[in-house]
Every structure is written in C-alpha cells, then in structure tokens.
Length: 123
Length: 431
Image (spheres, rainbow over the protein chains, first blue to last red):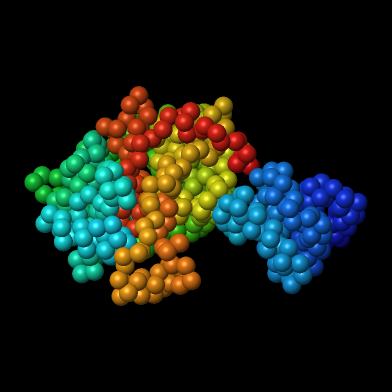
C-alpha cells in the first residue's frame, strides 16, 4: 500500500511530462495513461490523476480523437474508459469527455464499458 | 402477407395457421422478407394465453440431436422431438415446484438431470415415459447449475449455498448420495467436469474459479496424481487452486482434452486457463480475451481450438486458438438476415399499440420507432443456451451449433473452419 505522498509525487511528475508533450497529442495521452493510482485510498489523489488525463484529452482536436484511440493498446483503452467515467463525475470538460466516450465506445465496443464498470481496481 | 412482422403478429399467424401439436409447440419460424429463404429460427414454445414466445432459461440436446429438453422459464421441462425443423413437444416433466434453472442430458445413458430453485434435483430415466428420481441435495438455497460427469456416474450441482453438491449413486441404499464441497464466498453459478472425472472446476459470483478433487471411492477407479504430487485425491472436495477474476463467472467449460478451462465473466471477457498435467493450474496460466460486446452467458467448446460463446449480444461469437494465443473470432450472426420491414400497410390501431409497447418494453422513444424496433440479429434477446451433439461432430470438430435465447427462439448455425473464423481479424483484441 504505497502512501499518498509517493502517489501524488508520481502524479505530479506525470503532469509535467504530459504538459511537455501537449504538442504531440497521441504521446501526451499515452503518457497520461501510465501508472494509474490503483492503490490510492484518497479521493483527492484520484481527482488529481484524472485531471492530468483530462488535460491530455482536451488538447486533442476532435478530428484526431479516432486515430489517437486506434493507437492505444487494449489495456490502455480500458483504462481510458475508466478515466472518462471518473472525470465525468466532475462538471468540467463534459462535452469533450462525452465526445471521447462516443468515439471510444465505437472503437472498443460495449465490452470496454462493461470492463470499466466491473473492474475491481478503481482509477 | 408482408406487413410488419411484429412478435405478436408472427405468433398469432403461426398459432392459427400451424398444426395442432401437443403442448402448443409451434413449427417453423418467421421467414425473411424474400419469402422463400430457409426459416431463420424456430420458436420452441408459445404461451397458452398470450400466444407469445416463452423465454427459454435452459436447454439440452440428446446424443444425436433428435430430441431437445428445455424449460420455458418456469417449473416445467419440455421434451420435444425435432422433425424437419419443427419441434413437437412429447413430454412435459413437472415435478419441480419452482423455476427450473438447469437441464443436462447425459448422451450415453440417456438420462436427464434437472435442478431448480426449489433446492432439489431430479434424475429422469426413460421407459415409455420419463420417470423422476428425487435427489436430496441437502442444500437450503436454490440450485443454479447441474452437470453430468463425462462417464455419467456422478453429477455436480452448483447452488446458492456457496457450495457444489457432488452426487453419486450408492447401490446398497438404491439412492443418490450428495456430498457438499464448500469453499466459495458466494453463489456458485457454474460447474464443469475435468476429462478424468476426478476433478471439477466451479465458478462463482465471488469472482473466483476454483478446482476441486472429486474422486469417490467405489465409483471412481484409483485416482492418479494428475495435478502433481502436491494434490491428494484422498479427501473428496479438496481445493486444488483458486483463480481470481474481476467479475461474476457466468459459464465455464473444459476443452475436450481438458488442457484448457474456458470461462466467461461478466466484465465482457473470456478467459482461458491452461490446465497442465502434473501441476495445479495457477493465475499465470490465464489468457484473457477482451470481448468487444456485452458479456456472454454460455460457452461451449466446438473443437480443441474453437469456443463459441453467446450472451447479451444476442450473437454467438467464436473464440479461436492460433499460435498458442486465444483471440475473438467471427460472430456467427452476420446481422444481415433480418430485414427491416416497412410499416406502410400497418393499421392505425396496431401502429399505436406498437409505439407504446416499444417504449415500455424496449425503451425506444416514439420519434423513430421503426428504426430500432427490430434488432439486426436473429436473436432478439440474450442467448441462454448453446448446444451441440455427438452426431454433428466430424473429426473432433462440431459442424453445427444451436443457440436458444430469452426471446424463445432456437437458431441453428453452421460452424466455419478455423481459417474462416479468424480471417480478417487482427490480434488487437488481446490484453
């Protein structure tokens, strides 16, 4: 059980990495999807992590969403779906998140949603 | 008559025009719009009062595919013979008090095993009629699943009491004895026997798959150490291994050689556990395949390298082994056989009826009722049973598989070859 401090540091460094990669959207999204805080016990930490992912998602122009998703592996797609649901709990960027959700469902199928809902490891 | 083929219209037409067969079983099925294609499906049983197809909760076939046993989601089991695509119900088995949850037909000894929510199981023997023998499972919760062992001298019944009842026939008492195998933390949903019959696997809603020993003195010959020296078969019901999954285990099946245990879980995945000889299976031996669609409810091995799974997608999907890796293959229903009919000739009354019925039963709003009124798959609801029989096997491969669903329909599918099933599919659906 890693403590919250270590997890938050990891998220902060991931945040920096994503910010630096924002010019190349596919790389930024992949970087944001690394190292999810599964073991965290704090809602704050998870919110921070989701913010990093949303930052990367929002930077992708609408036309390129499909190609970014196509470049993700199966596990990364499932993780992205989990993050989308986590981020939709807040009220920011809902429109873009719903757009991502629609394209991801089309590419990965309803199975992806089922896995996001039933995974015991929550993002 | 090429008007709107709504369920009620189909059912009325079939019942009025069809032959008067015992038990109200109907013949044939709806035809595609061209009118002269083969019937896409058959309806097994119509409800006597509403004349609508009854959902089939469980299903089994006999050895040569000439007879089927099914339960129309109530406490009865119907035995029907198959004649030229029509199903004539010959016997109705109605000993159970509550809903029948599973039916299994032993191919060689021709006995039927049924289990029900009334906490009982019956073994049925045929001589002029089907005669039941009650099996006292000694459980105080519903029985959910039942399977004959491969040599048909024992059977396993899964139950909501978090245990599996292994039953064998005791000659002295002339009685089926049940021994409970505990270890699960929630309802056991499915059971499958290892080819050796001295071990079985069970899956539960606690998200685990467990293998147990099941060697019974007097019924089984002396067991060999098939799982290595660490697994002893002395005591029946010893836990061999525990495999974790993320969701309810809906159904499982051992491959014909029992080298692989396949199980479908409710998180839209199908997993393949390698069961080597000489060692107990472990978590590392699991290959997980992510499904593109909704979770599967039933799985069935058609060959050593091909598995068919059907469920909430209403479409039987093949999973194939190639180069040591399992992957999702072709879906048996291409989605092109059901033609959407125009409703130009529908009367105002039936159109209004349809509009409200669609919105209450299927959640379709009235803005565009025609678009989603009929699913593109032949099955209009989840698949609840899959079956194949020895007579359809050619060289260890089944050439035909049958699926039944909660829509009451039975569809028969030809099984493509391995190359066809995997053609044009990327291996991208792997974890």
